[in-house]
Image (cartoon, rainbow, N blue to C red; front, side, top):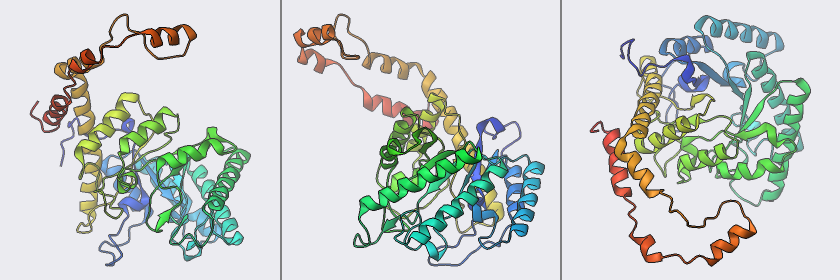
Length: 391
């Protein structure tokens, strides 16, 4: 166990969060039953307080059973709020489970049955009520069942229209209730459906400008989901950030071409995780660093604590490595050289008639441009040296 004066110990300002469903994951999979006993939400909060997390996030039914009566719901919420206060844990994000119950077998907001679509809206509004009561300001929407196994079931553009209609409705509900939610949309290419309608962060970034209240809606990219699609996760995060739409982020790890593994952060693709952490720290991302991952099925709950500590510790180690990379003299010299400005050369930038005329009239020396070195092999090896502790 790390010492108390360890510089890689989590602190509240790091904003590390875990879902109730992550540390409470019992290790059940499609081929085997649970290996860990049921743990109450209060005990999960106590565990997060023990390992040094800042916050806990939840689906509605992680806390309140789907068929709970109003009095049961209020009793459960009171007990949970008390536990959060006692353990110094906040609730920055809430979400809704629209994928577990069989009623959502054909989707929720995109289902063919109008009654299912209406029930999905009702359930989501109630989840927003719960999140607001717990103090959450971010509400995530993951459409795990919003997809198909066969396109014979509906036209895909009808599904997009239904999804847009639902998001617009929920934005209006948040405004009417004065909740102040930011809605964060989470993409995934497949699983549990054969194909999910919004498979990547880029798809959602294209949808958001078509909404009635685009200023309220952003994205919640997840490492595993973009990696399942074979994409560079950091690039998607960067586009979301540049668009002002990175409202939340799900950190875990994943091997490409596999099912959704939700591995401990940094346990599979350490260099990819490094570039992600470096980007988030360089741009000054201020949102929660949420770990949507779970411990190996081999672990007991002491192992779950090891898993949670490992997620946070790896992030902080990579944050330290990023600072070393940024301060490395050789790296910074190379970066300066490859981006050096040539005086007197007309450039692009903001268009003007004068600038365009100068650019069209200039004669570029292509051979001289080709002589400039681009030592990316050296840059990459210096990165590896830093990551492996050889520099």
